[in-house]
Image (cartoon, rainbow, N blue to C red; front, top):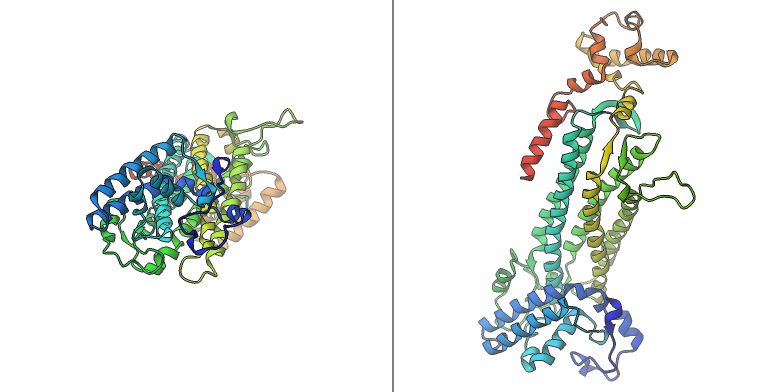
Length: 467
């Protein structure tokens, strides 16, 4: 888009009457935002039509002027969509470019459009309209990814794998249960965006530059016309607030955190050292020198792009931390980090949903890994507790038994009953049912547990939630 922005060798007549010399060319380039805020054009036009309709209804402009403005803006929208609109650097931003084109098309009626508003409340409105629509896209993208996770979890609700703490084998879980943990994370993420949208969905228009306007406007009419839940109730706050953008970027950062964690696991699991899964070839690349390599580039890039989104959150927080009320030119710097956050997040959600559908699971390798590392040691401790032994004593008994098994280079379930009974007389031959992987899984039979029946129920509840 930047290459389509042209410069003119004349003054910007929207505000140049106060000045004795034109803005320097370098300053024009430095201060202009049209190279990136052009993407707000549909929302700028939407907001302008609603504003003009209100001006007409309140008899601030004539109905004839409104009709000309509405028709002209609709034609400009078509020009932009067709790629026929010429963006001019001298006109600084998306707002002045559209207004100048409108005036060229319809004359003085176009000059009346800006009555009762400022670019300060105009841009705040545009960004909110755009971000509101974007929040809906993000929620839809999260639901798509949740659906992919549910489909994979349903196939593997009873597939045994090791659960880890400190990246050490801890207890057996199922792969479906593991995937459902990420479903829960994304469920919270979606709720955050829904909640964030409520604060986005307030109308700044009518605050004008900072103090409101002397024209008899009807802000509630505009809010209703644009689908806002209400108006920003303080004019100073309305034009200077960027909390909604920061909140959106924070919510995006948390989504990326969750996907980065999953990416790290996919990278580990696809390594030959784990060989738990295989990621479809279309999401991987090879090596220029090592022909055997299959690199998990998509998860690696998600992990990397997470830092990029974190950077945008930090940039927005830093941008706002020293600003006095009300609007300052600094606020122009909110858009590029916000736009890039959205672009990064939406494509990540889309590609991740597809990638999860392309994962193949190696059940045998998962099961073999779960059978190593004494994953059922806690089950043995629980067994002893149920026989009447205090848990701390049971913990110590099992620790001694594990040490002995390590010395013998066998698993706990491979120790003869007589050997186990040396550590606790309470142990009888029913202990081996407890020490199996399936026995361990089945014993966690409660809401949130990893028993296959509970995993299956969790998936069913999730599908009902998703509709």
